Image 1 (tube, rainbow, N blue to C red):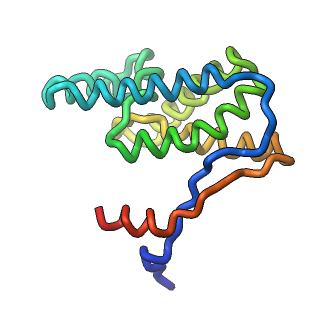
Image 2: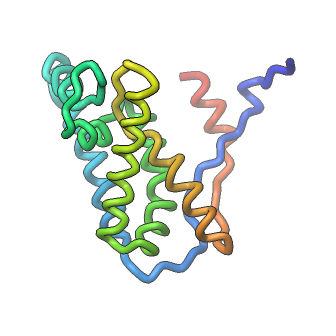
Length: 166
């Protein structure tokens, strides 16, 4: 088996699409803002309070509460976790929001996050925070339903090298 050297790996960051939108991405912007606000709040709480807050909001089959199907989607483990999710949400979410409308996109976003959480609980007893399934849902949907739109990406060879040193 061939091994890929980390220094040769390049990431592709989606920075947008050339799809024309008719609506302002209000829900997408609100979801990004809410995720960032929750993350900042998470980080400003004391370690003990923050850990208790995350434990109360995480999704786990061992202590299931229906509300956690929503709360776990807005909690993130670290900066790279929230940044990665938001980097994919912004370009794809706004395209989907334009197609579904504001309410339709909110239902799609939160509903798919809840379904992903249920699937996670079905497959493992491990708790989960951060709905990282969102980028895996929005990207394929946007590609499948906007085949004429080209994604604008930025190669990040130097960024990947810098990140591997962290």
